[in-house]
Length: 589
Ligand code: GTP
Ligand code: SPV
Ligand code: MN
Image (cartoon, rainbow, N blue to C red; front, top):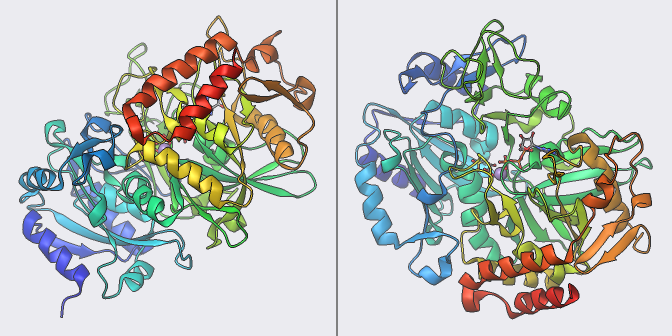
């Protein structure tokens, strides 16, 4: 008797008609064989899927050049398909499940002809964790098959968890012909199913990541009283050896991976990495909030990564422990056969750009601004011993933030959970190259979840309020902004490794030092200059004042724009958020 899993795979194969079906075991040996196929047989846009890089520079590493139209998430082609449009909310593109299915069937019919279908059983979360979920993704390209091995726990433990049941998250993926006109990422929350065609790009194609662990998982989390968030998880160790765990949400390409691996410039402090993109947060038996990272690797932004900014990531990329590491759409330093991107080091010559063309001075960046690496968490020198803890780690502070040239201070502590949720509901950030849209436009991105909350965002804010009530003592909520600029367009704050100075203030605030070091503003608390260690920093005169300024007029305008954004959620917006924002507005005078 065929199991539900076998039957489902057969059904998808009847539709997609692959030449071969390969069931993945997630082994090292298998990954090497699939990479070999990507180097020798498979092509994207006329180029091999993988090109081996110099192992002396980057061991176990391969360069992948994507289809030139397929370089970032495509939010306008991403849909949530549910019978009730209201449930899905204006924050998502909507289609009825029937309409979506018939559209996708046409695009998927025979799409794997001549290709191999990889069947990938995988877990999001540790095999011993009660919170882990079993999933199966099908794909027809080596790049996605190998990426999923890095980003998830693939193989036997997932098959064991599924057994003869139908209880697994399904993902059907095909790169199709890479035509953006025939590219869609469809989510079916009621069926725990994601159907994605036409893109091989991370968030569009690695369906365990944003599609399941945020969009579908957010539906599960709402009904099961937990949170699925676009957050990193880190432990901050102080000189006494005490570790405080925090979770931080920043929109795409706004500094999560850098913060997750930060190498402290303050003696005695260190960061332990647990996750760099996604957190699942549950209420523990003691009434505290516990966080775990469902992923097994990092899909990080390459440009800007260097020994100076993020030495731990460079070490991770060069560790050579877990096979393989992938570089996507970076430039190539031809003389060393090594990946290259803006900010890595001094300009080497000669080099090729991300499409493999000779790069010329003034011809724009060699690496695509959203060039990425895919690397196992096992390679990370700062990986926390608690990473594999099936229960997760207790969270003392939640950090929210964005990329703001002005208005938002370096750091601000909310007075309580409600005010934190209110400010989080209107938080703004300038758009980045992580998704296809105009870069640098200010948009409202509540909790950094605008592109990832799978259901009505008004309801989502209500869920946050309820979560606060389920907790014995909700974590303090902070807001950060590393990106404030001066009149001349230069960053006011050095950022990167120096962000430890802000993290130190944050953990001191959570450790009962509530009376000290903070100045009241109408929207929350900012640090006094004496409370933050600025030794050795070369801040411009007046920079600290500007960094911690909360301008009443700017913030009244901020709340007005925020309310306008929230108006689209109508009655779904919790009254308490509406009233909370009114109160903040009144505080601003
Ligand atoms: P996603 O993987 O898209 O979710 O991005 P992320 O939030 O993990 O962002 P990441 O840490 O990869 O940083 C994105 C970009 O912001 C990179 O080019 C970094 O160099 C830059 N960046 C990160 N932290 C800082 C900082 O503290 N200051 C400044 N100025 N830039 C930063
Ligand atoms: C993001 O865009 O937030 C990422 C990369 O982390 S992706 O996997 O494409 O979502
Ligand atoms: Mn992300």
